[in-house]
Length: 86
Image (cartoon, rainbow, N blue to C red; front, side):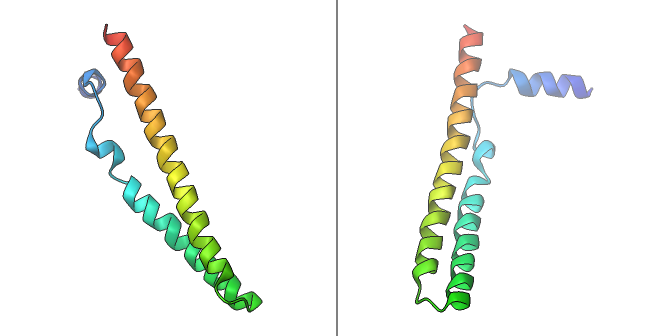
């Protein structure tokens, strides 16, 4: 029974929205984590927002990179499935 479900799922072509459902949450989470880390460093070192701003940019950059990796991997998988389908 489980084998039938797996073959049905693997025979399904293309990417769905469910594959990328968590990307937005991961994006926001990365920015928020680095924002708070920057604020903590600013409070600890007595700087005026330097690490907070750097934290936001580092968080956004890492979130974009993670999104790029996920989309590239999904695109490679989709291309490979299309090649096998020919």
